[in-house]
Image (tube, rainbow, N blue to C red; front, top):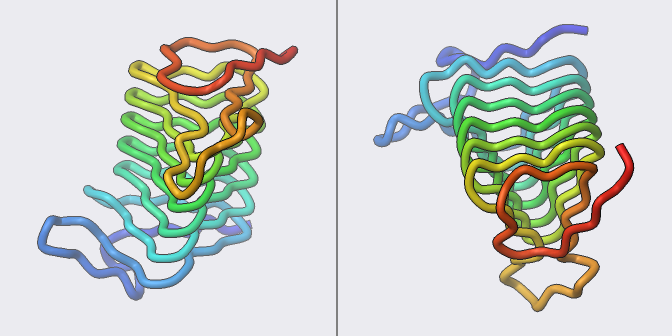
Length: 167
């Protein structure tokens, strides 16, 4: 499978006045996606990769971000809907999703981890700052929507209900 490389020459990409790279629509690839930009990639739709997604800067999608492998960014990972990876999710700064965050392995962030609904991973959940689950602003969340599910945790829970699982 091929790797989709997104750099400054990627068709349809434009740079805004803040130096961020904008793309209208969805970015999809059966293989991996490698984002080689010196700033954020902001996609109006979703980002989907059959394998992993790796970015030197931040990644933001208006809808969801999903990868069959891992998702890694040097800065933030943000999605209006959910973030889902078959392997690890890792960000140099924050990880934020309007809905849920789910990883087949671990989740790690240099800043906060925030989800409107649940946060689930099968291994270690790690945040250098705080972890928030169930902070959806469109409605009052139920206790089952505030779950932080992981085998091990390293970080402070700002909001959410911890549910430890076997690794």
